[in-house]
Length: 448
Image (cartoon, rainbow, N blue to C red):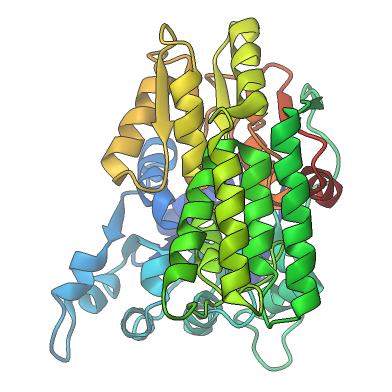
């Protein structure tokens, strides 16, 4: 209880995924409200985790938290907003990070002196983002701040330094970082293996052509021009269907009068984004500039598209996943970065299997229903994009995680695996990464 003791007013809790950071924050909130019934506490979490936090606080530590949503702020007007008036009477409030980063919401919440500010997945507040500005503003008006992150290094050393400076006051000591090293008694180390799959020769030929496509973009030296090519290589190494759909989108951009400048960044620098947003960010890169000659690039895309359409949509990697599912005879979670790949895999999974899916285009109630069905034993397979990769607890249902393609980053791998490799898991966790001999897969494996 470093925060309650008064020795520290800011703390970064950096336990690895699945070690109970949410529970520790809940215990702190319970103790604080027991000691100070008038305490006003604010919990900021990714949007997908708002309801989970509210439910766990109520069920596990008897903290009756209320949700602040967009409707709450839309009703506000006048000099005495209801949210501000209610918060000043005490209580615990949970709000999404994407809502808080809106300047008008930040300003409204900053009118309360919060007894404790809790921020989950704090690494999403990377340097230069609106998220960081919002969290820093609210930390400045809070008596105490507790930041939670399994991967505080996601944005590098600069990112860690920024996190430790949140809420700092002149002359105050640096924020202590609590990170336990070693394993808890009885916790077995997980086993990870890479399942190598030989692509069909015509599929591998397309991957090689995309390497040349990338090299042409590099030689043209157009600002940001390599980014569409990098995305296409990643989609090609996932499955042919994902490549076809992405080539179609790229072709549509090149047919337009001018390519759209996107807020582009090299792959590998998506760690300031929620994992669920990475696919959308890559799709934005597909709309960016490419080769210097758009006509030449368009012709190349048409040739690649014609070849890709001749491939079997699922490809050998997804059929390898199907064989693995048939053999394992136990519940499992399958992750993919791409919705196109999820749909292709769903189409080839055995029809007798009970499968539920979670992806970013689903409304939240449908996601929760799918999770509840899987957790209750109503489905054998949970097939998900990274919309399910952060904050969800699946360890009581299964111990096997399959990555249908190499994860985009080490953080993605840890967050996905952490859905089942959590404190309380009684069995050894197994993770399987499905990879090919393509250059894109080899480079991605090296990043892990």
